[in-house]
Length: 291
Length: 247
Image (cartoon, rainbow over all chains, first blue to last red; front, side, top):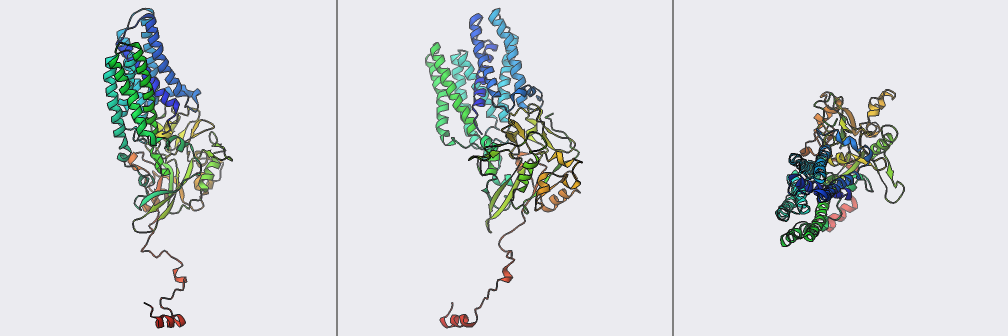
């Protein structure tokens, strides 16, 4: 799948923002006044910035409000609702913390639950697609969730929680990669099932339907850069998980360490998310003799 | 509404005969031609006369080579457009309700006024039936020529999809696949029509008829009787053979 920068930025940043909102809502930290303003600005900047980035890949963003109508069937529509509900509820919670120094516990807990639900609904947009076997596996929602919670924990200055969650993130990342490597084969889709001609013999593409490229090939038959996959996996795992975990363990009370840890984590998360797209193979590639 | 209808009165679709298709791409051209002038945003091209042309098409013809264990390789031309699936995954993922399946005839359509161009339906389709038009930013797909098949301004013979109407070999047939007595349903039953990628559970309406068996062990060389091959040479060649002791 084509790793569109807008979608990578959207999933990573909004996940991080909603992760931080989760900790704020649950009362893991209870800032008031100016400190609360800082925390909530950061969380909203990431969450809303990410959501705005996602509209960049729309062909017709001016009609984006219609995306709220189909929540009965569409995960994308559910994500739109959940994100707005989470942001509105946490907005009231933030007003209380910033201007009145109070933390409305029930409201915060509800906002935190909606923030987690938003991250999960984002992940389901990908996990629901049977056509992309690497995404269509149960570790996918888990992966989005642990990335949001571990990144959020670093931003919420919770070094020990972050350390444990980063280790879990590493395990889930490995699980997603290793399980994902066998997913395409497990679906049983081949050029023979795609063409229905397997009863005759082995099928190969003799002539593609067009000499140039097209939308399908650019969007779904993206094979560029997969040869660097192993190196990028190592980079993603080291920067997103190992390095920030070690930094937080070594300097748990240093603000500077938190900044370094979150920057390293972000770079690693971007690499992991780039791989999430670039390594994912769509079954339509079979019609083009590619994967 | 992106909920799939529980029942469709008809199941209009195509039956594509892989035995007959010669890969002339006339259906591709006819489809592009018709869908450029009526229904919805036109199918744009990018850099059409340049070095890297690309464009939106609703129907494309792949060509495959099938190698057999015992027998010659076989070439199959493979036209592919939207299969108007009964369990269409492209419909349910749509966040705006632009993508829908009609309960009256089962045609899957895009309401272009509501399409935001997110591309998720194209991701959900296993067959590559949907292409985002790069000029309009709107998802395009086969409409089964919904603006032809019910169009009373056209002569009756033209009230079928442009690809079917234009096919010079009759490799594409249009009809109601929910009616077991329709011509398309009967040909599917007789010839063993099949679904594409049945393992993905999309329940396509369009059916493909397999190529008829070809291969060694069959006298497929219609010119053989005309080739005057003498098993035993006669005359001077025969005398030479005998003299020199042909093995």
